[in-house]
Image (cartoon, rainbow, N blue to C red; front, side):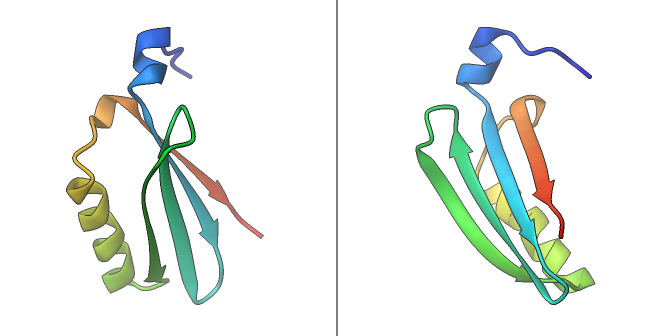
Length: 72
């Protein structure tokens, strides 16, 4: 696990994914809980591609992109 500096955390984007059998919902926020976007996408290869494109559209620094998945 990499430890991030305070500056990296302040500039990080956090993406939380609520996973379900048929679809997933992703929410992007910054450290201060300010929303950057959200997306619901199908649990298919096409849906995952849509999610990847959505991340790119957020224009975040991938070095400070933190993704967490809530699996049931």
